[in-house]
Image (tube, rainbow, N blue to C red; front, top):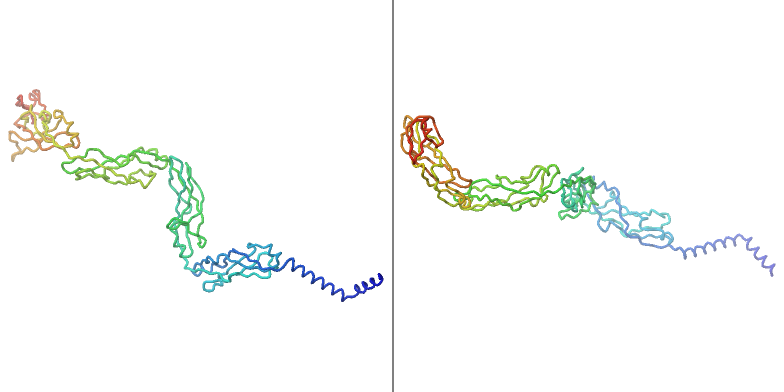
Length: 459
């Protein structure tokens, strides 16, 4: 029995046909096992970004383009063995479109594997074409502005701002470029007390102050270096003056009010230290012809010293009010002896008719000022310049009316007033002081003097 089995085995191993059949059977058995353990499968991969090649051909033709939202990311189906698929992710695939292959408003999508490409049986995009939105290309230039964010330390404010590059040129789809209202560089100044130097990105904003998407735009600069000065704040007093004369019967009280008594200013430290107050000049407030209080709105920024600025420019307008009152009338009896004679004609002597008496004059002004007037303390002049002469230039000796001008406080006016003055022929040196005494009479010629007259000799 044993011998018989050995002879059968020897026949099998020595037969080539049987050997080949055995190998084929083993291979088929391996295929069955592999197909069971590592089958070929199809697996989806999503959110694969689409990249663009040869975009410059559109710019050269004066056109701008943008992928539609549905074409920015695509999904694919990949067929391969399970062991290969398990090693892949969406990052192992690259989806591209070539703008030289543009057909109307669509471009074919090509997807390639960057890993296991030789072991992948097929890659099928869910969409074969990317949709492209084409517009005219627009170019614009914008001045870059510096915007600050945050609040500086107490007692300080943001001063001057500058950029190393303050212009940006932008090109892109007309619809996108047209959204841009301004270009800014933002600098955070929170808690700062000194100058800031920083480099920040250029941000494009629309009319609402919202950022504009720059993905489809070409910008000449993406960032700029900014310098922001931080200045001290100083509080100073504010004063105002006025010019002009109110209507007849009215007077200014001298009280000028401003809607704010102090203002906050700033500037470089050297200039700021020299400013103690700010004055609104009289030329800014004119009360000519006014019959009541005058209020004028003034832009005080116009009257700040060079290099000085308001901390809050929105508060530059200040109301200035000049108080007026209706003038009051008062009659005064002023001693004639308080007057000095002026312009006595040559060769004549002059004397008041009633040197010991008083003359009456009406004055007008604010009651507060009129109430302080003491007639005995008021002085003035009696002017004889209006005396008429004959054809030979001589003056007839007689009584004349001399116009009186009183020395009165500001805001007080007088009515017409005259006093009687006697002119007589005389000789001697001229005396205009109106206080001739007997020594003057002895030296300047014979004069007439009584208890109720004052005499002035004039050669």
